[in-house]
Amino acid sequence: MVREVSESCVDSLMTEMVACYCNRFYANKPELAARRIEAIGYQVGQQLSERYTMERPRFGDHLEAIKFICKDFWSEVFKKQIDNLKTNHRGTFVLQDNKFPWLARMSVDPSTDNVSSVEDYSAPTAESKAAQAMSMHLYFPCGIIRGALSNLGIPCAVSADISSLPACSFVVRIKA
Image: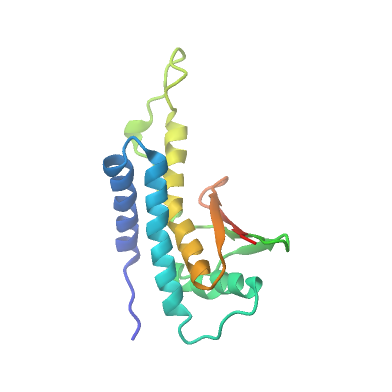
């Protein structure tokens, strides 16, 4: 029996989770909000990885596990495969998604578009606020990837890069 959840429900849950952690629970501590969002993603990634690999043999090496994440795991979670996988063959992998679903439908709140005056250099610009908001939404998928790989026996660190929206690159650094 296949169990699926509507994309709009997942989008709404993601948005509300990030908003609650950033605006209510840890309003003055964005680094704590980011760690908590990533930790929730980590738990989700571990559980999904357990479910999707239940009937598979263990992977022989890191590359096989990363390929599983790019093809099968990503297909189950986002209904598409990763668009590009790069590696330096020394434990660093870059997973490129050219139209990351959780960023493709994001928009910036127009009320935050007031550009700061020339005298006020310390106030964050609307552009930097938007970038910070988008980066907060990427801690969850980074946690999902880290949790999935951890469940496969691969300890790693995962970060995200959003240089050209809605494309997103996830950098996986495997710990020795």
